[in-house]
Image (cartoon, rainbow, N blue to C red; front, side):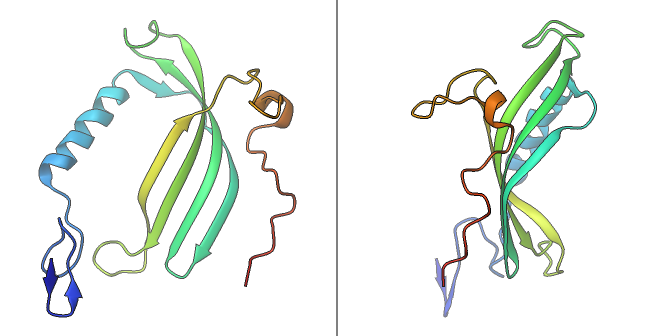
Length: 146
């Protein structure tokens, strides 16, 4: 939608700020409440940041993590069963709290499960156990292109 010279995205207020529907928020709260009642963290996650870039008021990072959890009820695992998750995540941050104040806030995240630690990586035949959590193929980081 176009308003004067300002482009307004669907789902945004006339001010141009993004708006999230109450229904969407209720769905997210219900989803995380569901998982929170069934699982709990054991200790702190082991997070390895593979890459972090900050450009102006926007930043992104890629990381891998090992998260130990314990089942609290009859969900995916029997109660009191300890489970280890291996995940890779991408996170996008913006320095704006939604009211224009310069506070870093996560605006998006995507988390995917990693394969088991001993599963060979196709095309490389190495494993997470052999290469380590958070390993990257570039050491040191490549120079930024001009």
